[in-house]
Length: 111
Image (cartoon, rainbow, N blue to C red; front, side):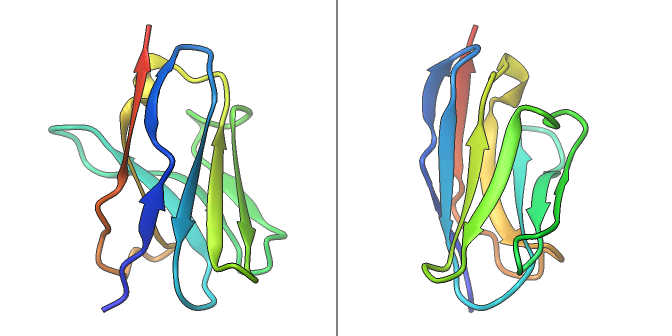
């Protein structure tokens, strides 16, 4: 069963930046999601297979940027101007969420 592998999380001060990476298999529209304890997993950003179309949650628009390298089967999430409310475990998956969820990568933003 396909399971993506996320990396790049860490602890960063508010206003700082992080770049998340996700290794996956296949040719699909991809997306990043995040989850905090006690809350539903929420959509963060998505990118079409071609990379030409991107979508963002309102809460991250203008601060986060999703990109991909199809030759390497990688998708990235550049996170700038981080806020404490961005603290979460971040996951990547197909846009339709049909893969099993990976372990995710923890992002902690300290204020």
